Image (cartoon, rainbow, N blue to C red; front, side, top):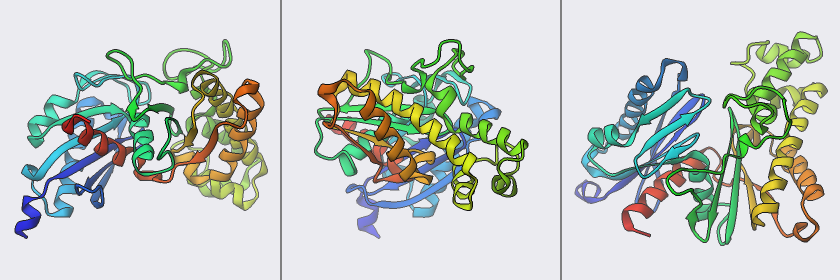
Length: 328
């Protein structure tokens, strides 16, 4: 017991469009405990902050740890951020703008807090512990409620001067295309995110083309989640499979642009859609990306699935907090 009290622990936090997850890690990043809640984004940023605090406190309670045993907290947050100030600039799928996260969390938990983009955290986790170990340039693309991107280059997260970047979900693919949550039209996110796919799937259900998805989830977008889509495909809803494959093809178009720009060693696909249907995503993204990249870049990059799965963002955020505290 005394030895346990002397040890220091790291919190990794993953804030998603529908759920939030707090993981507690030992110094070797062995998972000690976790807690999760629904995000309830419609309730606003202050409510979201309260739920973040409650979720971390829940993870501490599960592990029997106290706040003074924490070495630091890393939070993976969607959308453009100012990591140096711990400021959420804009999260299109949550509706948060210019919201300070770091200061109130440091006051609540009395330890250093680091705020980074969620897919930056995810690909950093894969670089440290998973599918991108040993790479010089690793790119992460995580389709979920939205579509996030991140890049680790020579062990460091690629950022702007005072902004997170790599918003692949907001590369414009279709001029005057569907309206995106960011306010622009024709973004990748508007045609390939889970929300976009679920909207198309709901229309198919309404037309009577997807009886299995109707039985599983009905037409409510809140119920047409990645697992329901995967189950409907397994049950024989071919129209749903084509909708998902079409979204994956659009993702492949976006990935091809990243390959032409960065020539990464590996592109790691993560997020709920990929976790539920990995074979579809690897097949379609690989096929389209290989077909569209410049000839010198063909066959020199690999498309793979996250090895850390649902823990990628939280583990990467905790590891990044450690790197910042230690000055790595």
